Length: 294
Ligand code: SIN
Image (cartoon, rainbow, N blue to C red; front, side, top):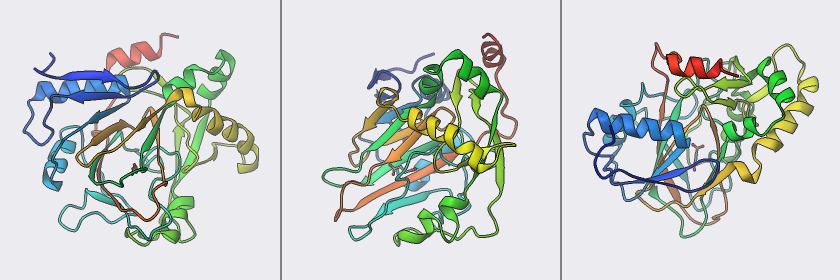
């Protein structure tokens, strides 16, 4: 059932849609939440404008889609540990999320979605890019698709969050907890079958994927590099221009994103909640049937 006054328009060929007519701070009926979830799965990233989301309201909204993640290496708001403040001050040189990635792929059970709300945005710049990993998978030859479907890859937060890492080293405005000694490695399929749609997507990313399972890092590098180049091809992307009050909700199971760092001397302030899978989340029967269909 589609909720009243729910408008969707697509913003690019591969992914992305803007949704109007929904107040995300309201106590939304289950049918509207189901419609938003369906739009997320179909369009991979969805955008809303003109919202007013206090941290409590953002937590309430996120929790309708799954348990909220508390980031292991980035401190959340003191009163709302599930809410991560993503801030770049005018004097900061490095931003958070300034490279292609899929949130939390370094965890045993990676996040399914992220909801980012813009509090303050620069006058120009600071857009976020998104890339459809489903479109990237579908553009490969059948032979390479088959090969990749037989592989699994190792993901780790070490490169990003250890004391030598990008996040810990070069930005002062966010509290990054050093992950030295606490960083595990987790293995995920290289091709993820979306548990709700059955659509297949590549699930490796330059920030967190370190090698293929059973392959050395050196052996893995050429194929990973090929995939990293391929996956960010322009045809698979869309770009979101933020305004204060904008919200982006992306599906980490089929999308990469990249926060552009092109606004030196200006402030950008966002808040993110990150949605984990339900403890019992499994592929729906329809998704399992579709995944087995080819
Ligand atoms: C992120 O979650 O990686 C940050 C995205 C952004 O700030 O645009």
